[in-house]
Image (cartoon, rainbow, N blue to C red; front, side):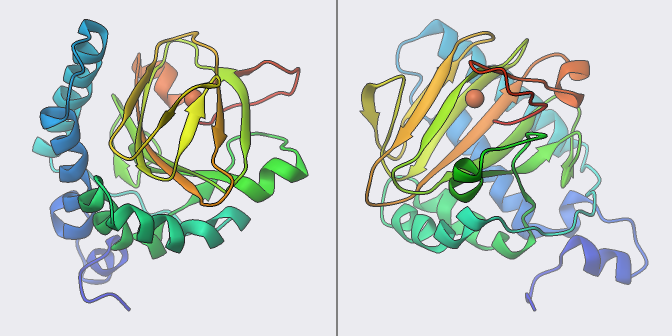
Length: 236
Ligand SMILES: [Fe+2]
């Protein structure tokens, strides 16, 4: 059992769990705040605008000391690669984020987001939310989370309607739409409707942090398009 309080501990103590009752979640969000406040804007007005929207919404959420929504932890096959992903992350540019994530790794709810998913992809991909309308840190105006890929994975082409998405590499190498190779610390912006497909390196897993901004109604029910006809409801 962890030495630091979890949402369940706060409930056991008779209080409503809130972010300030759960220091590990607070510090993880502070890592996101640092990234979007102090990371490189790369000279792009579009990226600067996105980063400002993320940090403004995150600051506002943290100032409210939001509720924690109790969610059952859940693993997926790909989470067998999480220890390696965190180990690699702790050796590179995103070590603060990797260490903060390690402190909550047993409380994460890993999901697919799709109503149906191919057997191959179900073994190699999952995401978890950290903050958003579904919790675990409750926020209606922003979603933050992580997506994990096994080595040698291609995540199918998709886009997000009315949602602006950034990925920040925590560990592993990956490319988007076969353009460039991104290393830990890189930020990639996908604006609403931008088609993107992710391919990871063939030796190590890849862990990305992500942020979604958009209208609150859309964040509550994101929807997503794949280039195939497969129905989906949500995924980073
Ligand atoms: Fe995406």
